Image (cartoon, rainbow, N blue to C red; front, side, top):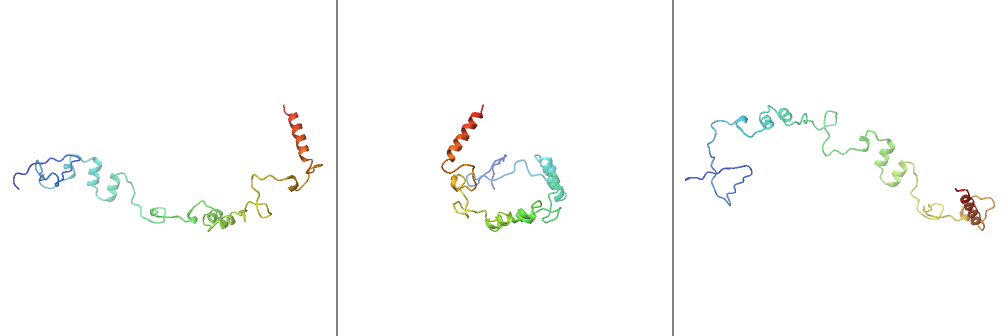
Length: 170
């Protein structure tokens, strides 16, 4: 190759032969013989320790990975697989009831597990439905009695009671 032009590479440089067809020449020569980690002028202490590590354990120690060489398994000295999916029985502090709710096939099975029976009552007005939370019962619909009260005079009794309470208030 006739008279190649020297090219100096710097950090971040990316010569692109398609746009800059310069031949690559090492300026300053190539070191004779082998290159050792001590020949790398910008290698950090950690980098040299990794390059010269005698084995994988020493390389892990150099980068502070400790004993991250755990094997996949099910014992106290092994690690769970990354795609491990515990079952209800694997939850150490779960109760039988909790496991039953967690594994219930449907809402009815979950209610059975907690002893709720058929608590899925619908809102309605019959003996097999529940009254809405904002429902107002009429006096005649109530069972039981108030001494001397009838449907006709209950409001008067309540008004009298309210007046007496108001009179007692400071």
